[in-house]
Image (cartoon, rainbow, N blue to C red; front, side):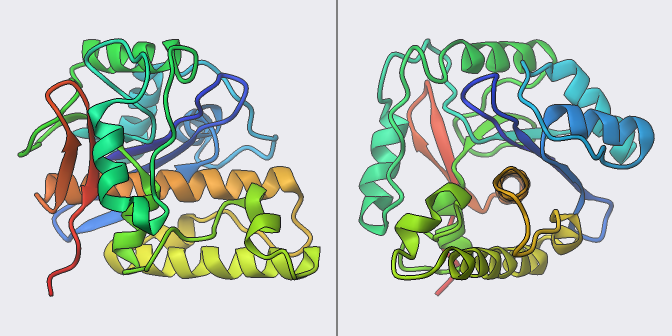
Length: 263
């Protein structure tokens, strides 16, 4: 199960996370803040120390790295990026359906366009499709490629009233009355809570988180956030394979979101 927090441009890094079920439940076995770091992890067994950079994704290279790390081919790829069987020209029914269901909880979707993510989305879908991972829009799913969206997924995982404040670039908006140091402390506490919730459903999540503290730079914090989002994507993929997630959309595109907890 491969989770990818895909950047909408080639100038920004994309987080990658790998989860596996070896017969004792799903575990998070690897995570990296960029495609390059993930592939390097497969080659040298550890994350490089260099700053993560953006690049054009190579589906075959990413899949090979995942198989090298996990020892078996990936069955499902869950990507946080608009994907469609048709060229994306604007808002899709998938975007509208999620916004209708989760807008009141501040989890409406961004509006995609021909420019963003544009060709990156088309190329990703095509490349994974040629590798045997066709876009899946209806249940049940046993393999393929799916689109996921971390914000409503987190709302369901943590049974939250609304979208969680965990984006590093928005701390000023979240906590305007706090000092910069206090905002960073709040952000780190929120990440720890999310990692703990993921650990409960996908062990290994806490260990896979990149380390951050009050001295971490903005670049370092963004890398941590990208890894966290990729881990959420991987977890959503596990719920899809377990028939515990729902597709929002139509026959052309669907965003998969975990079902609310029973009761």
